[in-house]
Image (cartoon, rainbow, N blue to C red; front, side):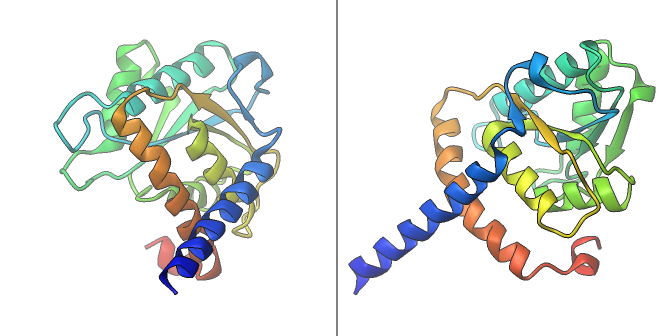
Length: 203
């Protein structure tokens, strides 16, 4: 019985993953020349240091790189940073990202902070419901972008022509573990969509 359950769980993860990957085709890009202009880029938050070991978080660095590239290439005019203003280790993700972008020459008046982006689903909901964005460019690693686009398109939001720019993927043991975790995150995403309550999510 245990073996059958394990096979079923793996099959569910595989199916959920493929649905998300297929949905993202033609919408996520690693080549900046393939990105169309959007006034706003939605930068998904993370902390500057990994919680384990307090080492530099390469996911953070590469997302900052990607946002800078888009802005300086004229692909976006504004950067909406959406993350947790009080994450588990007490770090304000949005302010840390803003400070890093300003240090790279991005003007403060081009940056908007959404400290209520506690989860990816919250970030895409807030972009549309709170900030009134119907079309925007999501900025994060590819796996994250694929999931964010699926959520934004299947929550009944008033959005269209979404696209994403892929930040570089770190090459580390932690990054490998994050990739594995993503399979579980995609299953949970479908559960979230089934049980989605707009009023609850936006509290």
